[in-house]
Length: 587
Image (tube, rainbow, N blue to C red; front, top):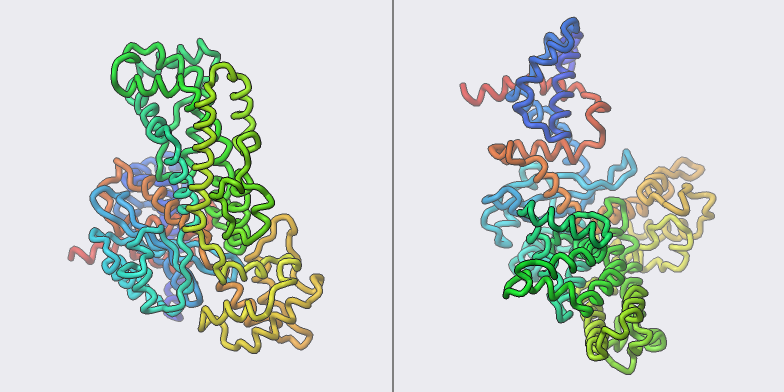
């Protein structure tokens, strides 16, 4: 450190400013997905733009140097920070994808609690290539990353991935192998993925293949400018607001509702277009689409889906958030189940027993067609078209609505983690004193016992929780009642001291901060793949995986914009030596 300080004191301040500018430029290219090749011309044109600026005239950062600064200076700094945060309890999230074409990538994220910022964050760890995605190979890939980063499996308290058997199966999966190293790891599965599975399973109970029809309509127009122009004429003719037909992707969690809504707004124009199409009378997809848009039954199902998909998507959006929502999961799952049961089951039948034991398939417990929840737009359509919609069509529609509801509830009961002991005992983490009023001390101790190693002294934890539970809210950190920041609250609790200067809740706050790292869902992994698609474009298809991972580290693990970033001495030092170290590889 002393030698480095002497070298630093002898260095020209101008050189430091130039080095900082080069590091800032590299950060800019990483943040905004700019091809490194742009750096060659930028180095030259910036001298033309600012001919009298000495820093600019010395600035030199072509594509090679910019790439190496990202890989050897910017990424290592944030990687070291992530590794440091993983020295305490953390959770891992992982998912696999063919985002990079032939290569199958495994994204590995960690969810950590930053005690300095008092914030729970999801950070990028690595994205190695794993082209043989068996449970054993995937685990070994993750384990290799852990060894390379010096991470301890004993610090892992939570695991989240999609719900594929290779990831979470009882035998021969990634999770089963993690449990050999960390038996107490908590696995929840991805509730957003489960909510989408519920919707997909229920839609398949309908007699019309709505998913397939939405896809066919999109591709009918996608590659034909002539069809698009013809459709515009029908939009104008039917006084339909001109909007694009959306693409429905069954793997995208919120796709179906948006596509249904758009299709309904374009229904008059679509019906007129396909009815007038030259191929409408010939066997094929155009005839099927004409029949679909002329069908009262198809219109009823679309109106019903527009109404009923909203609760599932609201649940999905809530738990896609990066903010801590895990403490609300048990409450919101039961609320969602109760909401769906209430749409087709009598209130008396629901209230007589446990929510998960309701006999919802018993027709005597179900509501009659007259008050079955199908949405006001469905009721209005049936009233307006009473003379055209045959009674048999109406009866078939209500019968399949019941099948839809039964399928959603059945899937939820079989897939959602209802009555999970950890989830049911997490609400005490909420800053609102009402949330902990009726919580038993035993339930908190049970959670601590499930994660051995997080809390050192259970007796102290018992005393601290009783103290916390009985404390006057005025004596605890303040919080926003409408939008409570759970992370900040527990960060403040961890710093709270008694009159003697001793920490008041050290064991309790340590447990709370560890539990806050349990992921809400696996949405962050999906977001990472979206970022990969923006980085690994057609113009950057020769980028190797090491460079791609460095860019992901810089983009995801930094929390400041390029114009706000302050370059540390470590980054400046690594920036100066980045190309030197790179060139040594070829000596």
